[in-house]
Image (cartoon, rainbow, N blue to C red; front, side, top):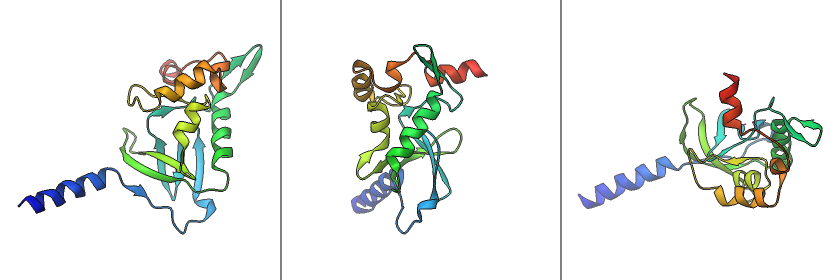
Length: 159
């Protein structure tokens, strides 16, 4: 009985944190939607624990208006390059997107985006990237060198 219970618990844990398989995949099987969303092999994946500005969202640096959502997407595009991310699923969100942390060459894309200042730790859902955000903030990296509105506030004001 204990063996069966152990197998069931282990199976449950493995299903909760599955890896989205990326072997034998052509480079055209990835689409970068915005700074925190990709489509990998037809599956829409939202990076868990972070939030980036919306594509139409602007920030200001001095007198210059910057589309900071587009900047976040460009940084992600450059980071991924010709690689295919490997993603660890953490479930689904309200919009039925897969929530996952994705990696390129072993480096978390979420951590990279937050630490370079182009994403925020989405504290409402996770505290995982708070230290990385503090690093970017203290060093005035990315969005922290601009005047910005948090993406969750921007979305709230758009409705």
